[in-house]
Structure formats: structure tokens, C-alpha cells
Length: 435
Image (tube, rainbow, N blue to C red; front, side, top):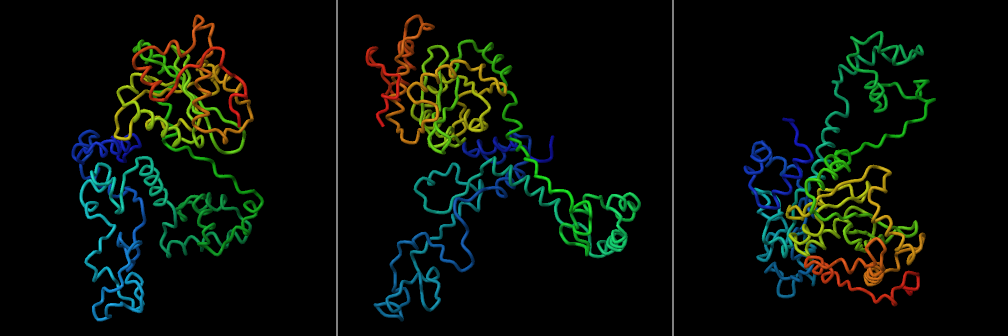
């Protein structure tokens, strides 16, 4: 077993905290000790607001407080009409006010140290704490990086190193040559010496290193996070084919996004049912992961997790950055599984042909390069209804609406307020959107 917690394990901790499991139960599930889980949550939990500085008024009633008569010796008119929260005498009102209530919650000092499953969190005005797995993982890796950075030598050892390298560099020798000839005496690598010189540990400066001032500083290589490395594991097109073969009755949905002009703003999220070619279109404020997750959360809350799972059994999409958090798409906020997400091969959009072909119908109404920022939810619903009312040859002369005939599919149409358009009234041109 790895000594450090991994990102998947941290997702398990986050999910089980939402389900009100104890640290002992989470530890048994991960084969870890309860104290390990407790330290993890306590160390990497995130607060929704800052901690007050020493002596600061941290009363939750402070913004609306009008008290000016807390000190009895000041009379009924108070301290020159000043509010007690801004006392000119420097008296801290929280020490004498009976209505003082700190926004620091006492429950956060006890297990589970977070508000994930607190029944009072909805109306609570106090400072809240949560355990987000991805932030905890990033903070953990940063702490490891910081622990290995800096100068790890005593002043005496640094003086001994300086006495060796400074006169040799003055002779024009390179650090590589010095390290090769004095490796045992230095006790550090060439790379470490360069880092120490960058930190001005020695009298030597970069200008004293002829080669270094000639070469341009390298651009830092972007380091992929563990999530980006792992998002495709178990979710490739081969895994998709195996899953569908093992579950032949599962409904397949293809998913993609449609952008307007190059300017930032609204983006379409499109989802199409392979069986009926019925396309759902959702308007998002941007093309980020959070916006896609919000659509999933809103839809599953409206339909219910069970109905969502029956309708969207498996989803196939591309490798866009907006889809690279499959765990959040596959699970509800409380941690219930609602779908299975798989990814096409990179640069292989032909593996999800249905959604790609239906985008052509969207482009007939909203040509490529046209901004989506002027559109609203009603415009999006109108585009969706007209596209799905077009008769298709591959559907034996029927429309996608005609094939959405099961009880679950009718509930979906009702929840999204989608209805077919009469054949002679179908419009597939920019005239459909007046503005």
C-alpha cells in the first residue's frame, strides 16, 4: 500500500463524508487508520471565509448591529453617538455584549471537522468548512514540493562549499568541471549548486557563469495533474465497447459542446440519444468543467437520480477540458452514481458520429462564427424543438420526437418543456432566432 493517500482515495473520503460516515468507517473502506483520515480532513479542509485577525470583531451580527449603549457609564446617548462596534475608546464590544455570537462554529473543533452533512448548514451564517478532494490533493503535492525546496545545508557546510567553488569559478572553471573533480568534498549535485547560486547563497552570481548568461531561461514545462493523467483510465473507447457489450440494453448518449464566435461567453452543451437521434441542448455561461457539472446536477435534481440513471446510462464524449472531471459527472453531490462516462480516442470525433452530424442542423440556424451571447434559455429550447421535429430517412420517415415514446422519455420531455413542431412550421434558418 502506498504511504501517501492518492487522489481516488481522497475522492472516497469526500464522498463518504457527505454520506455521514465516521472516520473509522472510511478508514476500513480504504484500509487506513481512522487517525490518518482525521488528520487528512483536519489538515486539508477549506473554509468558505477567512479567519479574523487577532482582536478583530468576529461577531456575525456586526454588519447590522446598531448598539451604542453597551457601556453603562456612558449614559443613554452612548459614546458621542458612535456605534459600539467602532468604539472610539478602543473597547472591544464583543467582551461586554450579551448578543455576541462568533462566526467560528464550535462544531468544527470536533469530528468530522467539516460541514458536509450538517443539518444546519443551509441557514447557518457561521464560517463553514468542507473537504474538497482535488484541492486537498493539490495542497498535499505543494507541501511535498515546498519541503524539498530551499537550502538544506548549515552555514558551516555552505562556507566549506564556497571555499571550494569560488576560487575555481574565478579561474573560469565551469560548475560541471568542479563537480566532477570535487564530488566527494561538495556533497551536493551540480543542479543544487545552480539553485543555491540563484538564491544568492554564495558571493557568486549568475553573471560569473559564462554559459548560463548566454542561454535563454527555459520555459517551465506544464505538469499534468494526477487527475489529468487518470481521467481516461478505465474510460477509453475499448472500455466503452466492453461495457456496452456486457450491458446491451443500456441507453447510449453522445455528448459534445458547440461554441459560437471566438469571444468568451455562452456555449451549448449537446447530448444525443443514439436510439432516437433526439438531441438535448443546454445553454451554459461558459465552457468550463463547473458549467457542465452544473447542468448534470440540475438535470439529475429535476428528474431524480434513478430516472437520470435509466435515461443516461452511459455517456460517450471527447477529450475536451470541460469533460476531464468524470468523477463529478458520474456522481451526484451526495455521492450516488448516476451515469458512466467514457472518452473517444484523441482526434477521433468519428467515434461519436450522431452528435457530430446533428451539429450541422444547429449550424443551419446559428451559422459558425455567430455569437451565442445574445441567446437565452427560451431560444435554446426553441432550437431544440425545431431540430428534433425534422423527419429523418435513417429513422424510417419519423422524427426524433416520434421515437421518444417510453414513459421515462416522456417524463424527460415534460421536465424540459419540449414539444414537437408541426411539419410545415419547422424552421432551420437564422430566421428562427429573431435577434
